[in-house]
Length: 133
Image 1: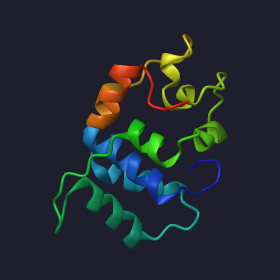
Image 2 (image 1 turned 60 degrees about the horizontal axis):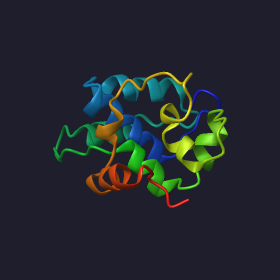
Image 3 (image 1 turned 180 degrees about the vertical axis):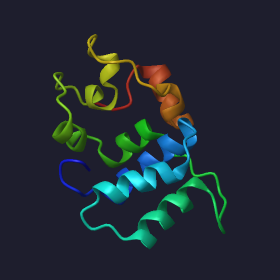
Image 4 (image 1 turned 90 degrees about the horizontal axis):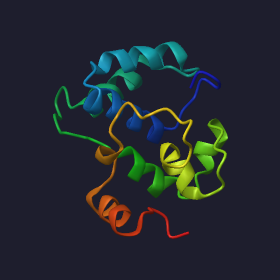
C-alpha cells in the first residue's frame, strides 16, 4: 500500500480482519490509514468497506478471516508474499509461515494458530505442512 498506493480487496479484507478482530483496534484507524495511502481513495467506498468488515452498521456479522488459510487458498505458491517480502527459503511453506522456517524471523504479533481454518489446522497438525509440496 505504501509503495504503490493500491491493494487488492482481498488484502484490505485481511488487514481489516487482523486490525479489528485480532488486534481489537477501531476500524476507523484502518480506514484512515488507507485514506492516507490509497492513490484512488473514495471516502464512501473505503469507509463503507471497513465498517462492513468490522461488523458495524446495518450488517453486523462477524467477518473474521484466517489470514494464513487465506494466503494458502488465494496465493498457494506464495508469489504475492514473495513479491513484497524477502523469503530466503524456496519452500512454499516458508512463504505461508516464515517464522517456522527462519530463526531470525520476528515472532508474529497475532498467534498463528488463530489464523488457520479448522481444516488447515488439522492438516498442519497431522502432516506438519499446509501445502502438498
